[in-house]
Image 1 (cartoon, rainbow, N blue to C red):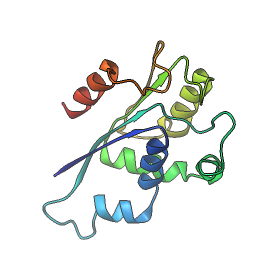
Image 2 (cartoon, rainbow, N blue to C red):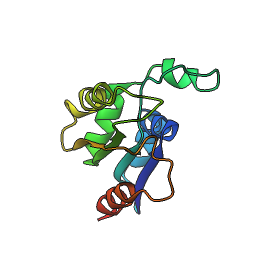
Image 3 (cartoon, rainbow, N blue to C red):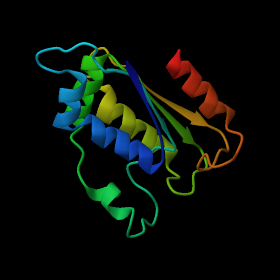
Length: 145
């Protein structure tokens, strides 16, 4: 069984935090190995962010609670699963797309042996909230192979 994780906005935070949990490591890499094993096939994060402009009360904890970056890198690397991030160049919640993209690469790209982390900036997609998001569909289909 292959697991693909696809998230939008705060859903990307959920994916990353899930990948950092010890219980996720146990689920993906049981000891002793069991069959059939759940395999992480890859992750797609759309409109991903670590910081947003003017966070409101419900979203603030997602911006301030620490993430175990090393655990995320280890999980991705051990699984050999790609992490693909789609950002827009005009997202009102996270307008500094260059800094956000760099943060994803620095935090999860370095040292993730066997894992590929890519960031793609798409022109004019705001927060990827429209009905027709061909880039998102294409990225999902590419991830699924």
